[in-house]
Image (cartoon, rainbow, N blue to C red; front, side):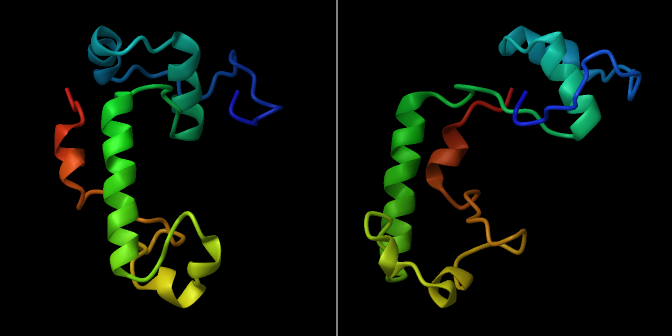
Length: 109
């Protein structure tokens, strides 16, 4: 799952229950396997958790944001390390998206 060849679902790591698990299962069809993976590695990929229309809108906002900083994601030669450093977060150069108006529309509960 997600590139981890050695991961065994039945490992005894982190068997404690999290109170949010059952609530999450009510709004998103998360599997016990995904919960076990999260407990072990601290993250899990939730496919299609954000509606496609919001994803498309966020992509357009991101494109416009990067264009303001001289970067065109359709032309990766325009994305230099120096330019990227001006807009990326401190976590490994990832572009933070909390600034996006669309993020406010993403379901959180």
